[in-house]
Length: 448
Image (tube, rainbow, N blue to C red; front, side, top):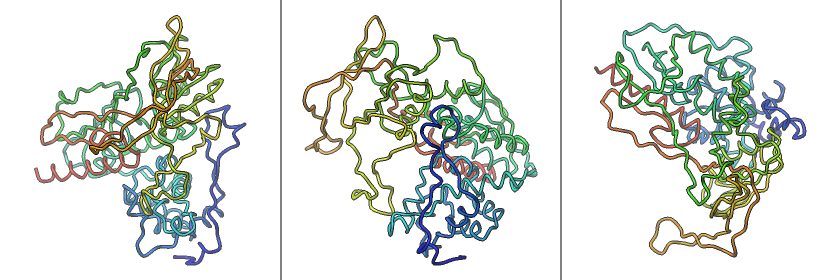
């Protein structure tokens, strides 16, 4: 620990976002970066706590005290080795992870100024690629073959771990490229797809084979493999089946997000196929991260206005959440970079029906509601408040989450990883699930 008192004299300093008037005109990453000196100063704030709750909070078990200390001392390569020992792809989590570790940081409890672990993680990894610390490994093969179905974060981590353990790994992907929601769900302004491509070059060089446009039926898995990892995510979005659902102008969130990412990758669509918000009043139904991504994308496409509604109550304004005290994750109000770009946000709003004219959406009838305790226990009861109203909209984006897939009974050599096993969750949890699945495969085949 280089400077045990740094947290007393150095305040938390974030890189921040590009100015709104600049960033809404392109899909470049909104987050900026600090210079190397400031980044090392931020790393020095890590207290090397006796009980590192950051390590406890991270699904991957990352060890921020160790790599922050190496970063502060200027040993960027050691910092990357320590980080990469628990996190296969820190360039992903360093951009899009909500940083559970930071909320569990002791400095968050004391001063609400936790160590900038996520930004430090991204900076360490970028430096590693620039300085050629990311090396190609050529593992000795053990003669066994494993198929990974799905190339999202869970599938990629499972493939990487198994490949480095000596298995010959083939990844089957239904889309035209790898990444799953990293590529087709998260906008480029949060995760530039060149970051995924760069890692894919490493994985291919290390011997992993990728087969794209392969829509595999998990009940009829390809022959010739000793084990299988099912990492197909949660493909079914939650729908809103209310009157008027068949009107033109209502889309699932991923209809917009995936198509926009494909457009940026060079794919062309017919005009009638485009899911584009240009000149439209957009209503986003769902208050989570996917809804936020829709807001930012709508702005960049040139929408007239954006409104976001959520059926649940407004979360408490932080930094503390009495219902989930430190070191647990506080369920407080989250304002993203997309929200900062302009958005009307409303909570406790229930959607009653879609309204249209000549088959096209013109608005949504909604009603304010309140939640009351259920005398029989379980989910609270929803009660209407006041009169219904109409929110003007000629585009609705449904961002209400995803349904947990029901998996069939698999053979003993088939393992399910990530969201395909647990339901939709964080990328970092999917990555942890991929690592666990790789460990289970290795134990099974080693015993066999």
